[in-house]
Amino acid sequence: MRLARSAPALGAIWVGLALACGSGTGPSTPQSPVGPMPIEGRIGDLRFQALLLQPSWDRLVGRMTLINPTASPVALRFPDSCVVLMRLYGLFDNQLVADAHSKRCLPLPVELVLEPGGSRTFETNVTFFFVLGNEIPEGRYHVTLYLRPEGGQEVEIAVGRPRLVRPDDAP
Image (cartoon, rainbow, N blue to C red; front, side, top):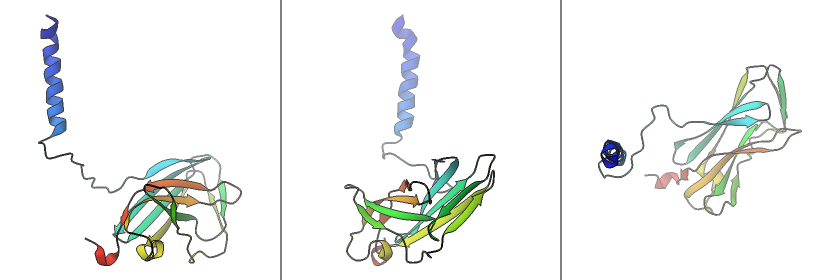
C-alpha cells in the first residue's frame, strides 16, 4: 500500500529529472535579452550596482552606479577624476596582474553630493594593450571595480571573469 501511494510521486520526480536533463546534448544556458545583470550591494549608507561589459574581445568597460536610499544627502570626495577604477587578477593564483589607474585621471579631486533618492553612474574602460601589453598572456582574468573615497576605506567589488584576446587573434 505504501509503495502504491509513492508511485505517483516517484513518477513526477522522474519526469522532472528527464525535463531538467534535456535531450542529452548537455546543459544549456538561457539567453537573456537584457544582457549581463549588475552586481548589487551596499557601501555604508549607499547602495551600488556594478557591471562589467565586454563590447569587444580586447576591451572591458566597468560601470558603477551609486544610489542614495536615505532621507539625507550623502557627500563623497575622491582624490582624482577617476572615481571608479579596474583591477585584473590571475584567475587561478589571484595575483594582481594590472591596476588600471590611468594616466587619463586628472589630479583634481571630485566632490559630489547624492541627494535623497539620487544616483550617479561612473564608468571606466580598458583595452587589451593597456591592461596586458605584450608581456601578459591572453586568457581569463578575475576583474574587480574599486572606489577610493577620501576619509574612507577603499572598496573593491568582483564583477566578472572575462577572457581577453589580442585583436589580431579574436575568433
